[in-house]
Every structure is written in C-alpha cells, then in structure tokens.
Amino acid sequence: MGMLLAALMLAAAATDCPRGEALDYVCGPEKPEDVLALPGTSWLIASGFAPGAGLKLVDTRSRTFARWYSGKGDQIAWDRRAFPACPGPVDATLFNARGLSIRKTGDGWRLLVVNHGGRQSIEVFDIAASQATPGLRWRGCLLMPEGQVANSVASFADGTILATVLTRPGTSIADFVQGRATGGVWQWRPGEQNAALLPGTELPGNNGLETDADETHFYVVAFGWHAVIKFDRNRTAQPVARIEAPDFMPDNIHWTDGRLLLAGMRLDEPACGGLRKVVDGVADPMLCHRGWIVGELDPTANHISTVAYGRPEAEFNGLSAAAIANGELWLGSFQSGRLAVVRPADTQDGARK
Image (cartoon, rainbow, N blue to C red; front, side, top):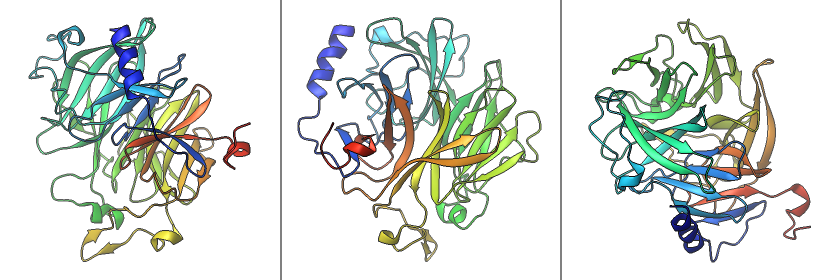
C-alpha cells in the first residue's frame, strides 16, 4: 500500500498553484475543513467537507497528497464488539469528512472523523504510523442521535468521546449569529451505544472541540460569541470560563506541537462590510474573502494570543483549522479547494531565502 500511495501522491502533486500574498498553496484537496499533524512525523491529515472528498494524507515535505481511505478490503477491520450498532463500513464514494481528532493508542493512533456522507456519524479508524507511509484501517462508527448533525469530535484517554452539534433541529445559523443557543455537546462513554447531551453545553453555534491535557476539562468554540468556552467534564451545568477571541471567529481548535491553536476568519472585515450580518432572517454565508487569523489559547491564563494573521487572499477563504507540521503552519478551509502554508514573514515578498 505504501508504493501505491507514493504513486498517487506523485499523480496528485499540484502542477499550477501560484502562491498568494502571504500563503503557499497545495491545490486539489476539496474543502479541507479540518487538519491534524500526525505527531512525530511530517504527515498531515486533512478532511474533505464534500460528498466523496473523504480523507487526504499529505506529505508536508514534498507538499503532495493522496486520497487516504479507499474503502477497499485491506482498509477494513470492523470491531463489531466495540461498535455493534454501526451498520457497516463508510462508503468512500459518499464519505464527507468534517471534524477530526487523534489520540495515541499503543504503537499507533486512533483517528475519529465526523462524517455526513450516507449517514450522520463519527467514523473510527486506526493509524499504523510505524510504516514508511502511515496505514489506515476503518474500525467502526458511532451514529449520531436522530436529527443531530455533528461538527467536531474529541476524546479522553478513558475512551469517552465528545461531539459538538452546531445547530439542533429547529435552529438556524442566523440564530447563533444573533447570539441564541443552537447547539450542544453529546457524549458517548465506553460501553454505551447512545450519546447523551451534556447539560449546560447548549451554546450559540457549538463548533470546534478539544479536550485538555489534564483530562478533566474540554473546550468548545461558541461560533456566535466568537469565544472559547471551557467546561469541567464532570460538572458541565456551568462553564469554567468564557475566553474571547481577538477580532476573529475561531472555528476548529486542536493541540498541535504542544500548543493549543485555533483558527478562523477575521470578525470585522472592512472588505466585506464589517461584521457578519443577518438579512431577512438569513445569515451572510461569508463568501466574501475575509482576513485570516490563527490564535493560541493559554489554558492556564484563559487567554488567546495571535500567532499569525493576514489580509484577504484571492484564492483562499473560509479558514477553519491550523496545524504545525514539518515546522510549518498549515491551514485548512471549509470553502477552498486547497490547503495553505503560512510563509515566514521574511519570504512574504515573493522570494524565498
């Protein structure tokens, strides 16, 4: 499988992908809404937020990528005992991957993926990272409660899995833009097949999700508030903290290279008429290209500082995730057909040094 992936990566290498003002691009990955660096390697995992876009494995050294999940037999190892309610392997032709989460397990990694293709689910994969090219095997799935559409996913070391829902049935994007509660956090505990809504986690647009290294807290992006809400996992009725983001709309949030990074579009963008608006009950879809910002959350100080930012780019919009891979800052997007790499400030004049 390693030789096949290498060949696919060569075939998928971008042939014409001009650089932007401050960003380099890897063209081809369709709507890479979330990105994760595989720790200790130069590999990057990107989701594909469109039917059939699935998962991409990115070699950050060569800046090439390949479709990672094919659905073929050598990638299927269904753990029916752990996932008895799962109806079967996810269809690669429908696989619509959104939020991602990764956790070390023995000599490999457990990858959780939010899926909208063919079913609303959390798909579970194991990654074998000891090979030259990381191997992937589908292990099972957790079905979302009826009517609920997941956005992001995360886990604790004891096997507990969390998932956010941006808008519950009967609510809309316009609702959370105007500050009304629309979503929530659902939880599966080991051995449980059905998820339960955690009381007190209903926020305006529950979006990005991450657990804390202390294993007792988790973080939820409230998109409508442009803030991160910190919860105690054992007492969710009241949040521990509300942490405001400085002039941007954080989307996904992840640990990467020991740092808790979050990324999103500029909140007050003059080129787009300022703040996001609701007109006749419909929220602006934010197709106008906004500036991009990556922030870092300090879990001790409950403070977000700016790591990188830039003006609107003609070929990249909808920043939704950030990861550090191969010493570089990689960006994902829920709108664009490409990944972005932030160039060092001293090379943003168009000439590498």
